[in-house]
Length: 354
Image (tube, rainbow, N blue to C red; front, side, top):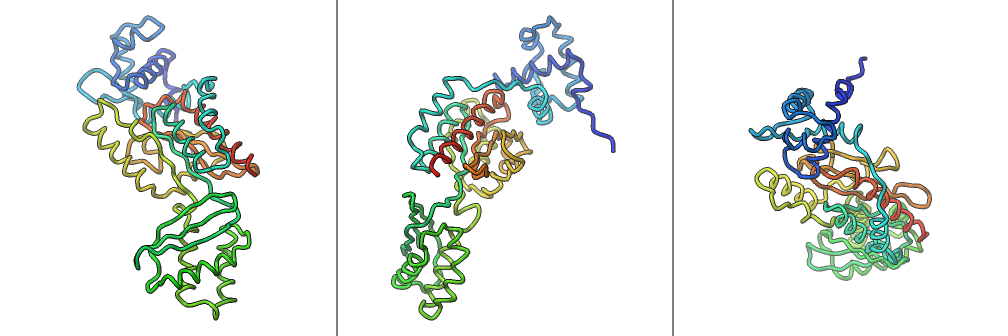
């Protein structure tokens, strides 16, 4: 089978310089780039006419596009992908950026939710995109479980872990529940917990119910099973997507299709569907990954790009991820090291708690 040619292999040194400069300029100004702008930006003295010919060749290769009648060009998704893979120069995180991340998150190792919220916020602030953090599954031993009934159709299960975290989930209780059956279910669970983690409790609960079936009311049995299912549901129970800085995605000059793209992205983020896929994006191991446009499985309809990196616990197991989402003209060279350092710091802070 013949390996597909890389368009970069078909480009002369001059074409590469024009392409690189055009993409870097587009990332900087966010608008189509014309030949006169490029002639001033290029280190080599090249006439505007020659640049126009090169741009036409690059358009034929599928690397550039003409969004309007004007002579300006923007990189296509294929062009941006090639730039990131082959021409991008990734710098080091600056001392100031490192200090800002550390000072923002300092002192919150004992409050995981607050620490991760701050991580998302600092990513947003530094990159002017939306900061995303997928919180890890909680494996701390359970201290207490409680059911709270708001109405026959609406209840809440509250879980307190031994490390002091308190989380809750709203759910629809089985039909016929009463305050007494909810109390019975909570009493049974609290007697059963015995320092188990949630995953351990979920695995043992069926046997516990069978052993105590005669002592438990039928309604209580059903509530226990449904209540635990609320917490054990992958993608909505343990895993929480923390999003900060959505407003950064709305630019003053965003009109028409851009606003529709942003609206779609906001809808994706608000629904927070398929969160497990966010972690799947990092399945190839540690390190930063860049998803451009429709390569992004989570936000493919939005025309946005995602820079994402996993973070690990003390056992080197991937337990969550941090990232930045924004327009395809993200400053990848600067954002990649910021995301990478934040992921490493989150992993170290979580590991220090164990």
